[in-house]
Length: 128
Image 1 (spheres, rainbow, N blue to C red):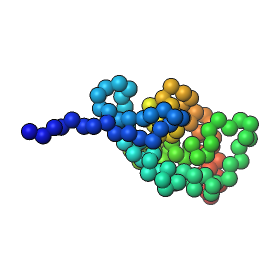
Image 2: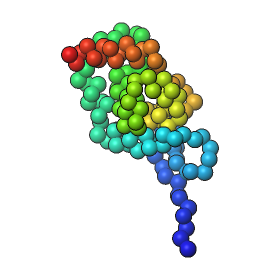
Image 3: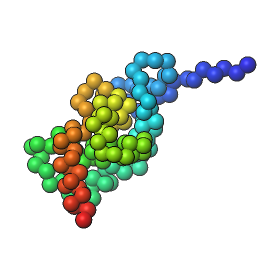
Image 4: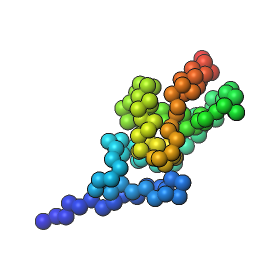
């Protein structure tokens, strides 16, 4: 008989906190795959490279989320099947998405909606 017990899977730490997928309960999410995407994205540097291409014309004193953070959240949402920008209204408080974007689950949400919408309009205008 085989042992079907799945051992815990460790991810890179976020703010010195150890992250482990253990499959035994606790804080649950249906978006656990986003953690694997986050590892691949950071290794490839996709969000960092995209943010370098687009000029950030926002007032730095009013910026809550960097372009890198916004690109990272949007990339992860699209890859997980959430292609509509308004899906981030729900996902911004999801524990796995927050960890994937480098935030702890009990901290500030990713991409506050009203600022995100203005920034995406600004990015769209730069691309044309």
